[in-house]
Image 1 (tube, helix red, strand yellow):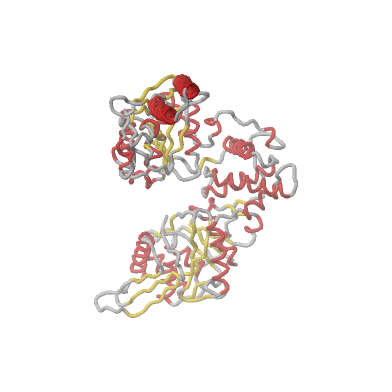
Image 2 (tube, one colour; image 1 turned 45 degrees about the vertical axis):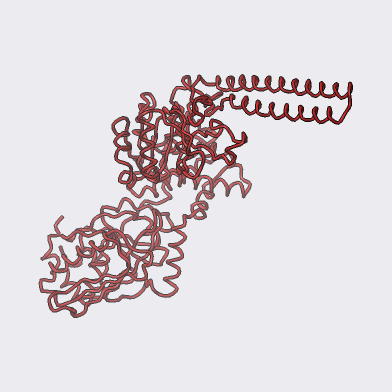
Length: 635
């Protein structure tokens, strides 16, 4: 390999927004696109999860959905409720228990019969009330007749005493008769599909049921225990679906109670607060034969109650939700359907033209972050659809056009992107980020905030005599995470290997400038290596170059995530050239105007990085010769 062989290499030509897209379907606007009626047919790109949900609904199995937010977990739960049979729905009533008023009785009846039973008891209570009214009228008439026959103070007092005594007796009868009316806990009358209950973030009383506190507990003024019973979401989900997102946020005690309900298919209701009179009440077991659809991210698996997860795994399915799908004509057609669905679901925005849908698909390509894939973070993509629709409405347009989508992407920037823009502007203003000239030991690294927001990360390195006579140290500052610290240690292995001399006489200081937000990951490895080698050898680094890439101990440049947002951050900072891993070259997706502002150089080894980033000199050529002789860089 000659010294000048790679210096004049051509920069990568990234995929551009301007390319025409084949959507696999002919249409003028999304008005012409048919939206499926069933929710299960509206789920995009999660074919494996859809098959599992269909099987689970048919066999009434529990499901654990693990994946990132916005990938369709709650939609799958709702779709499962549509697939469950509705002919078996039941009403649940709670009756007073004459033997033990603190243990109300539970009865289940077919759907719609619960209302009839309650109405029947109410009619009976009303008839008792009418009898009492007649009795009171009869007593008052008798007293008035007695006064008419013989009016005296004694007769008047006796008459008033009889009337008051009668009223008190009838009031006591009213209390006793009211107790006989049952309470309808769960009413499924009129439902056309199985219940879907979203219990995300529910507290113990809302999830498991509760008994209200009764401040009047004596003198006949108290509310009967059965009337204070309130059903939990597990009971309202009887014969349906109980959906809980971020299930690991439930306390272990609640997860244990949920497990009991799943095993027994019934769970008694009691007061959840020990300070409440409701804690003395405990009903008979209340039916709760539900299908649990639990959701969360990968951390959820570690924080779940082991027995609860074992129950789901043993009597159901675990599904990992995909974040991307292959960029095929069929899947592009599905995204066309997705746009039509979002317009219909929102109901306040106009339909999209074909060119506008193409722009949405391009955004899906970009957000996937992988070559040949489309993103399945459809909630974020739906946000762009709605923002574009709002812009079209504001402009008074009949349809959403391509320029509306482009404007929506700029307007609906996530918080991380807004912070990144502010960060770059502020750092440039105070010259923390430099884009001209060259400096020894200073390099522009690249990083991401969140999912789609890149920032320029200035890194500096200096070499000083070791503070300890025994060994030299690599001292890193800048609020680094564990992975980032380990990546710096890997860099030291390469330096020791190529240097060929004992570097224990030196302390190497590496500073990530003003990274108050913290740094995690190993994508700054080649940046750190370049800065340290520059400081050791005294060779300046070009400041119009930025770089990102992981580095192995053998000197190989490994792939990273977020290539496109990192490059966009470099463009916004005014940088002219970017170095990325060769493995990521097809992941880069830029608009035409941005692609014209940057040169992108894919690299495979650390010597290629140094060849591009370091200023041309005899020392540089000697350094590259030593590195290529020492490190096993043949790939």
